[in-house]
Length: 119
Image (tube, rainbow, N blue to C red):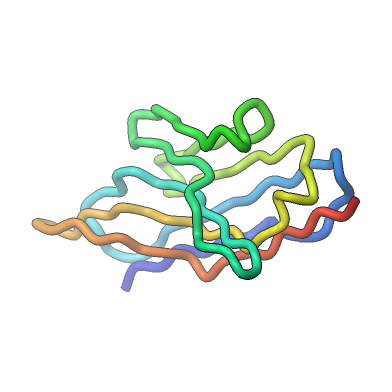
């Protein structure tokens, strides 16, 4: 049973910082691309940032220069450092991972963690 467990959400004032973590557990062959998505009330879930197992990262334009995604392959963990947070960043943040359970690939989601930015 593969699980993604997130932590690090909370309430912060505009301009503040938070760091999200997501750890994968269970039996699998490899973790491929990992990412963070977010869903604000009444809106669709959108990608925030992704990172390959080689460390290549991509960001939505909305967070470039403010958020940094990273991963520790030995710890099977992906991080999202969020700086200069804005009220528009308020959302539930979900971790996502593309995982190989030989010979197939599966997509897994975390349970979500609330990030609230006050003005």
